[in-house]
Image (cartoon, rainbow, N blue to C red; front, top):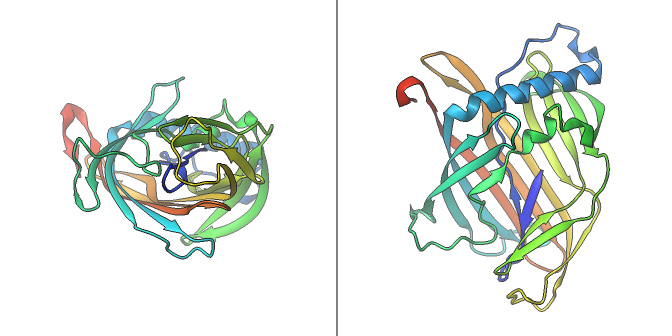
Length: 286
């Protein structure tokens, strides 16, 4: 649920998002579409806890494409391509972090002197599904939004929004800013029979007015930035592992779009592949 942002030469908002989904909890009965929402959220909370405890043994490859866009959403500048190796780091009772190691930049191996751009995904980011943990669900208002079909499977959709809107918070360093919008909303797609989260969409509520501090390097003349849109959509796919045989839902893609009225906007796409699992003795199973 975290978003980060703003560059001295290309001004933008970086959506930090990597989401894994856990192994499912006990399947629901055939009439699960009528299960009370409170029970659905309880099962999803158990599901996410199971993920955090198990998926630490999985590493993967994340390809990130950053594309500046104009207000009509047409490409408007040079595309930046990055490849990371990533893993989840979590201890029960503590925040869950996604940790990345940069391996390629624009098609070549990364070098120690490669300087991160403001829109590059951070080396350490929070795991966004934390908001669905049982201890965090009370911070949001959830509502049932009906039944649908996704990838040929029946799903139940649930909307969410921040229970209490907080003031947006920013921090700045070397012309790049980190932004917490303070209020979010979105929708979750939950598999009816398995409790698996198959999709999460999120964004901020309303319009954000942000001012770039005078002590920050900045090439744009306008220091009052208006964020009009900041959307993220995360989709998952089933990944099968052998020895032992298990199937996880893991991220397939994350697409985000940030529109800024008076500065460069960005479209960012994350694509995931090459999932591997560590097993006993440090062996990696493809």
